[in-house]
Image 1: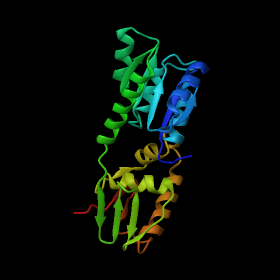
Image 2: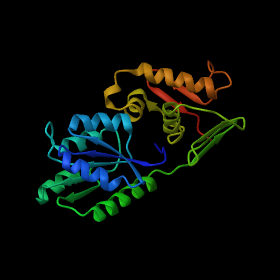
Image 3: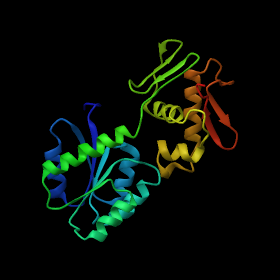
Length: 230
């Protein structure tokens, strides 16, 4: 599987729609994942971190608007609603809950693709990718490279995601709950040990003296902070 393909999560309980969308969108630009219920969608969003979600509102276990609300508690992943509901009130509810766009069934695949491209472009534009550098540590987000003392450091995907979160908020304290929610999802809020282990691993890779960190600083009882580059 090409890791550079953008990940699309299709959430719809109609198998025919799933098959059609998977066929129409699998031409080489996207990797397609599927979910048939709201709970499956929330779990998949947490595990897969898709680049975009296509969401039906009429799901068997919960309304799609509720799925959007729960997603917006912890992520800004673009969501395009794809629904048979045509009433203005339904569209307003979905958009107010945090949907990025609303497409009514039946739909043209060309229009859907165009709306997907707009949502994906917007999500990239809203997330600037800086280069963080202080002393011997350099994090090049555009190239997804981490260097220490001029030598590249290999991080696991989770370690990199935690470091990126710290870099994009350099100088600011991030609470344990915020970091757990952003990296692992809301179901992990009561499992702070996984964050502690990841921070420890990062320090052993990036700190000259892991027990006396210079870069990834602990705010006791609150969370962590990356030393600002100013």
